[in-house]
Length: 383
Image (cartoon, rainbow, N blue to C red; front, side):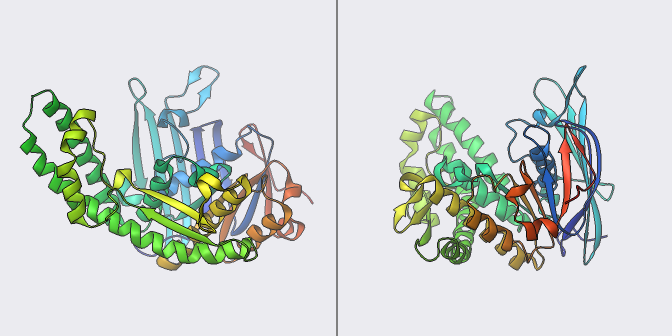
């Protein structure tokens, strides 16, 4: 048995799904190396990738509510969904099980077991390291700041249980402070009660911000080299972390909370802190999220994901599993080949496509090719 925070597994050997999305039942063994999953749209390719990534981060990367993960059958929504993954690494094997059960309303209870032993999600995040590439990654560049903060948090949580704990505590403190702001505005609480929560926010928020700054610095160096290769040196990438307030020091954060109390009370929310920070991507000194073309934005997003994979590989001592969901459809032939060539250092990668011709022949021939149709996965296809 591997230790949860010891050397991580390096590949998924088996995936079992029960009433997950459009899969009523699936038992799928996965080999080392490349796996190409071919199928038309709405057949279950993305759902399979979602299940695999769920085993890394203990939550869906795309569902608004976890109830969406439970299959809708002919007789209505099933009572529960189950995802089990077996993984293998140099230190041994591990089995991770996630059980989602319907409760009242939209609520879903989640039970997690590792090798049959109940665990909290915070203990299991990152046991099986994974990096998800998707067609929606362009939103990391052009979308809302929350997407970029979540990207930094997911990457950090796969490396540090301390970071995950601090993030959870910060979110609880933020909820408490916002509630107190609303009560103070109604005269039901004294403003000096905010001092306790402000101190907690500065303590946890200061750690989160410094960790993010260090992560961005490390990713920036990796992403710059990758982006330079993808653009043949014609475009320079720079990642720019923007804290709120702009001075990232704890002293500045504490001052902003104190000076902003009146404004925060009027709005019923806290407008300073890591939950308001942003990350921008500058290409040739221009903000790619505002001025970049769609092609430039997609190249930046691809560079970012490859940098994430490289960073996890370096920091953990073993490569993560790479999950590439329909990422070739919007890349030209050259970019596709560059992406596929960059997968060589990784022990396992899964790639979905509606058109197998999008995968260059040498990579297709060296991979296991499977067909997905209506929630079933067929045997490897011929030629």
